[in-house]
Image 1 (cartoon, rainbow, N blue to C red):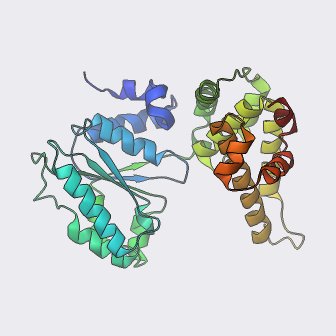
Image 2: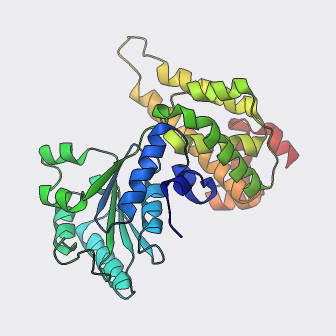
Length: 319
C-alpha cells in the first residue's frame, strides 16, 4: 500500500507527535514522506520536545527498511570507546538482516570531537552504501542546534556534517503551529485517559484559548505532560492554574531589573521535574502509592508528603 503524505497527517494513533493539520505540518509531512522513500542520510533539526524521535521512527517506517529494526544511539553522554562499541553492535546486528534497518543518532550535537572522529571513521560513505545496497543501514540523526554554526565554531567536524546531512527536516516549535494545539490536546487526552482507564471531560472553548495563548517552551512534550496531568487529577482548572503560574514565573524579572534569576529558574525546573516524575510513577502504578514509592526509591511517608506538596490532595484522598 502506498504511504502518502495524507496518511501521515491523518493517523494520530500511529504517528503521535507527527499529527497536525496546519500548513507547516502538511508541508513537513509531505517532505518527510518523500525523503523516507530514499536511502539518503537524514538530519532532523528542532528544539527539545518538538518530536524528533517521532519523525525518526516515521522516516524509518515509511522507508524500504521499515520492516527491519530502528537502532537508536543516544549521543548525549557517550565516550569514544562506548560509541564505537554501540556503532559496531548496531551495524553488526543490522547487517545480518536483508534488508538491513536504520541507525538513529539522537542528539548528535552532543558528541565531542573525539567521538565525532570515531563515528566518521565507521560510518558508510555514499559510494560503498548506495541505494542498491540493501545490506547497508540507513542513517538518521537529530540535533537541537544548528550544525552549520557548530562547524563554523570548530565544535563539529565538517566531513561528518556533510556525511549526515543528505537531507534535512526542520521541525517547527509548537508556538509556531498554534493551529494544531487543540487537536494535539484532544489526542493526548484520549491517549492518557485510555491508558489510565479514566474519563476526562471535554475542554471548554475558553480553556482551549488559554492553551493556544501559552508559549509552550517545552513544545509538544510539555503539552502532553499537561494533558496527562488533567487526566490524572481530573481537574482542568488546577492544570490551567499551574500553566498560569508557569507563565508568570517565566516572565518574572529580578528586582534589579536585569532578567530572570538562574537560581530561581533552576529551582523551578527542579520542582517541575520532580512533580512530573511523581505523576509518571503514580500513573504507571495506577496510584498505588507504595509501589510508586518503591519505583521512586523514596519512603512511603516521603511520597505522601510530596503528593501534598504538588497539590494532589483530592486525588490522594480518592485513591
